[in-house]
Length: 232
Image 1 (cartoon, rainbow, N blue to C red):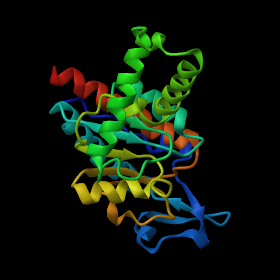
Image 2: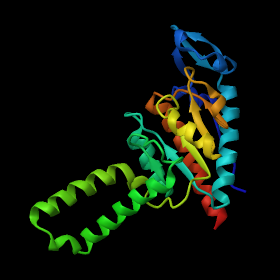
Image 3: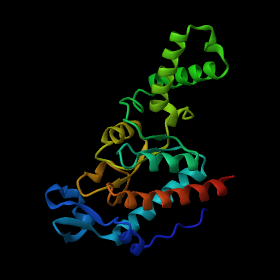
Image 4: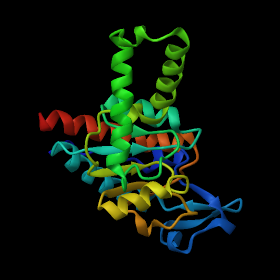
């Protein structure tokens, strides 16, 4: 078993994990995680957040230690680079650009596009595209650049993941809906404005503040790296 990831309510508060949305945006099913209000903004009960985050990390640890795949998804502008960086550090697939409808539910078609991208990239690297005119090569370069943005994070994901970790459910609810259809377990930060019912392992927390999401990401990274060492 991987060592337990230590959680601190004080650290969470310092990172701004406890701030939800304005009172008018409260989803009724998130009331259970709210302890009060400050300046018209709902405040999370961080004891409950710690409990749910711990539960999510235990599941994440299990998935990784069994050699299964987890996909990170975070397409909010302020979170993209951070989510991608941690995913790359952990050696796991990620989606940080727009979620492509059908990524899970039409996986075979998406895989064909990924394979086409990889094949095109290989041909460029081996000089195989050198036989084309300069204009044609330029078109290939543009196509590779576009495909890289879309598919680079999932280029090595040859089958559906066993779990998906979403950072910003309001932005990527389509991903969650597709995961539900395909029986993929869902871990997600859930802010006060979303319905947590679709999520298997909800983490009640601020999903807009970079510092708050960084806190969750760092704990997830610690958990994944420890579990990978244990599973070897």
